Length: 162
Length: 212
Image (tube, rainbow over all chains, first blue to last red; front, side):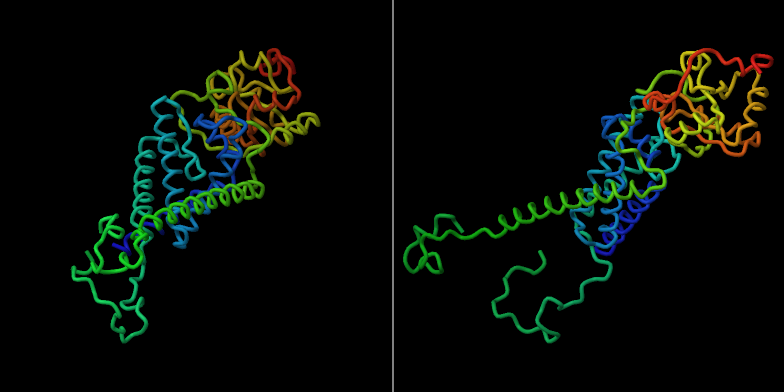
C-alpha cells in the first residue's frame, strides 16, 4: 500500500513536471489558451499562465522528491480541480478550445476532463493517505538499537496496531 | 477520563490529578492537529509563492514569453467573424511573430502581410499594405500568392487570438513553397491595440488586373 502510494505520488509529480516544462517553450500560446477558458480577467492572464506553469513545476518536483508531499498534493488537487471545472464549464458552454494541458495543440474534450478527474483522485489519495514509501521502513528503526531494548513502560493491553 | 475528575476526585483515587487538582488532562491530539494544519497552510502558501515567482522567471526565460503587460482576451471576446473553416482538419500551428517585430517589418516594407479574415472585415480595416487571402473562397488566389513570392517573409493574421484561419492560410502558403511564414501573435486586435499602421478599403492587388 505504501509503495503503491509512493509510485502514485511519483507518477503524478512526473506528469505535473512534464505538463509544466512542456509549456515553457511557448508561454505566449499557453496564455492564449488560458484566456480562452474565460475565467481569468484579460490583464491577469499572462501572469496567471506563468504562475500555473511555475506551480506545476514546483509541485511536481516536490511530489517526485517526496518533500512537503502533503502541501504539494493539496496544491495539485486544487489546481486539477480548477482545470477540471474550467474544462467542464467550457465544454458545457460549447466553447471550442485547445486544452493547453501539455503545451501542444490538443483539443479539450470530455476525455481530457476524465483524465483530470483521475489525476485529481490521485492527488487527493496522496493528500489523505500520505506520500508512502518506496522502500518499507526497516523493522526496529524507531528503537534504540538492534537488540530492541525492552520498553520501560508497560505495554497496553489492547492488541497492537489497531 | 472525565474532564472534571481531577478536581472532584476523592483523595487517594490515584494519579496526578490528586496532587495537581487544577490541572486538566492535556489533549495533545487536538493541539497537534492545529499545528499540523497551520504548518500545511504555511507550506501550501510558500509553495504557491515559490511557484508563482518561479513561473514568472521561467516566463522571462521562455523563447516565446507571455507578454505580462498586455491583456490577453479570449477568442470569443476579441471579435466576431468566422474563426475556422467548417469541416477542415486543424492546421498545424505556424511560427508566431510579435506585434512590435511585425510592425518593424511593415514600416520597413520587409515583409508581405496577409489578412485571412472575411472580405468585409478586411474592408473595415487591415494592416497597411496587406493583401486579402482567406483560407477558402478567394477567386484569384494564384494572383495573391504570386505577389507574395516577392517578399522574403510573409506575416499572416486573422481576427482572434486563437483563430485557426491564419494558421490555415500559413499552411497553404507553406505548401506553395514560400520560405518564411509567420502568424501575427495576438492577431488583428493586438495590431490595433499597439497603434500599428492600418488602413481601410478593398484590396485592388488581390484580383487579376485589379491594381498591379
